[in-house]
Image 1 (cartoon, rainbow, N blue to C red):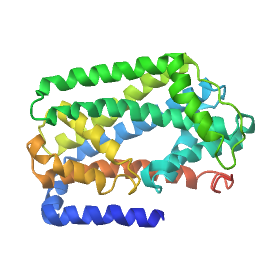
Image 2: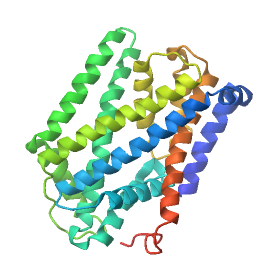
Image 3: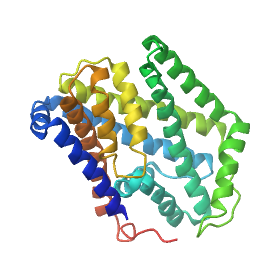
Length: 306
């Protein structure tokens, strides 16, 4: 089934290459400034570290003590599994690895840490994507930044308010996890406010790093579009790549980037080249995760058991 999803993404990408011209895209990619690739790779690894640190903090909010080394290694293992699953759903493999190391935590709590981890990403990226409202003809572009600011602020404050964490986060998770095959029917606690707010801060830092990757790569392609527009495009592309019809956003994110060419004042071939460079950063994370998996013990290389 996963192979079928990858075929869908590949077909979309091949169609885009035919539409904009594979030769033009190759010319764009060959003209990239090598230093921008290095900068993008360093920022990508920094984002990986920030997100693994955030997951460790969220684990602490549920009373699970995970060492820094284990948090980074398990997060990278999840990144590897996520790279071969549609919509990055393989990220939840971290919960099973966590349960094997700390059985007292339980499967439900492990999945809850990953769910909160993904929710914080999704919330902040969605707030940034609100800036795309400026595409509406009667909305001036100066409205975009305030909308994003209030969206981010509202999301952070709401997650810091215990009734919201109980009503909109903990209760739905409890309802879903009680119906999960292999679940342990335990009632999830509500994570501590301090842990959630600290995780929000790290999420914002990782979001800045994610946008920085796109900005650095675009400058390497001589795209002089304002960083604000690139930030919104990055957020929209990240959201679209979560649609479970392909892996790593192949095809879907590329379509968004090509469609945004006229808005950003550049050619479709250049935007498709930028999207492929962003894909290369996702591949880099997957390779790092694969190396971590390959160097792990034999137990860690086995699929987690239900």
